[in-house]
Image (cartoon, rainbow, N blue to C red; front, side):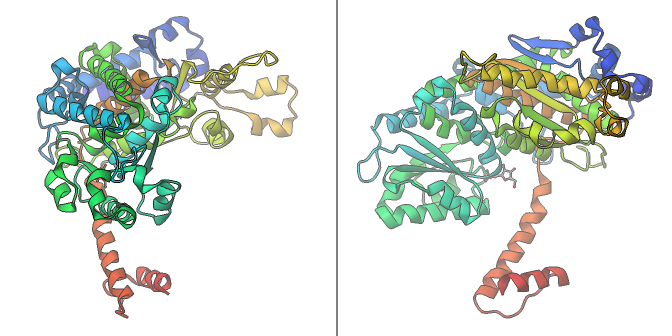
Length: 536
Ligand code: F6P
């Protein structure tokens, strides 16, 4: 990027070299200026290596890179996914009923009617037993978002009350172990299977769907398929060709990217089945709340814009190639996995929208709930590489616990860590402090914490359906903002193609070898030797 704001930001990197977050954090005016809110949702950027001047320059960069225009184009349904010629309209999936597109409303109604019928026992399995269990078969965006949402809702008291007597499982991996795990303890008579695939061509999903179809047919006969299998897809003709009754198909559209599809039927159907319509509606309302904020809040107060700009600052200007997502909430344990796809499949690109090479975009994302991560990789965060972190916490637990003989409740214990870790990363510990504390000289270098390590702190009220929806939209829109600034197409994924093509070639070889062909053809010597070893 060589715009005036980008040049100013490069100068800013040099100017900031002598500064330390320890000192920046001591300034109350700066701290107040870098704390942002949307309703009761707080995002604190005081532990980012920015001053108010840096932030103004980042906002200038956003304007130079036409972020407001790109956000407007996205909401207007312009085909901003240029390489596929498609609009990017997942926000339309969350529009309130009176504003929703007719086709969105129709599928939503279909989902709510169907889930009510299954949950209420009006629709039953082939032998007349209620369908109490759901297996959702899908991979990538047809799995990760829904699984994150399911796991996040599972222990929310309201959602849990709606799920009594029901089970929801996911089958993603083509690994037969995943088939075993997904079906373990389930009875085909009481199981509804949802095959979820945007394209309905994904090899793993189709093999898993055929496998589970056999599991149903072996026990209940061919005629049971219509009552036990439904599909979610944009390719309804392929659903029919697979043998699922189009009456049992829930559609979505090309303008919903796979990794942005959690609030389409992809996520809404399994979640409405498991938790009921009110919870599904609350989730959509939360996502819409954040969508509306993203669309209309001024750049200076726009949370996805500010977080995206800080992401660009850390990645492109400060040169940090990775980012950690650290929810202090066990219910969010699958959000890092979902975020990996949303961020890395979107912005892990080598060229910009016009095909010119780009560098230093798309950080490597990873994460784990706190405090578990603290006892794992935080060593590296504190003393190894500098990894910008996102700390996410809640004022109230989904499941508070307190005991008269404990000084603080379990949630306070968790949150004590949540507040301590960002400060430890930012402030560090000097050699002088260690010497003063009586640390032996030989240990001083090992116990130094350089500090000055950036993080954002996101604080929400409680992990309920509404806030889970907001979090989903917040990470989606941050990713979009980063992509808008970097000038990449955050909505295509050509990088997944080559491996798939080579996978088919190996699969064909395995099929030939398994049927007696002694030759292994067309592979390099290393792969040939490995295949020989595998085939035995
Ligand atoms: O291979 C990557 C990908 O295309 C993802 O983008 C997508 O979420 C996933 O595969 C599953 O695709 P589908 O929903 O079409 O089965």
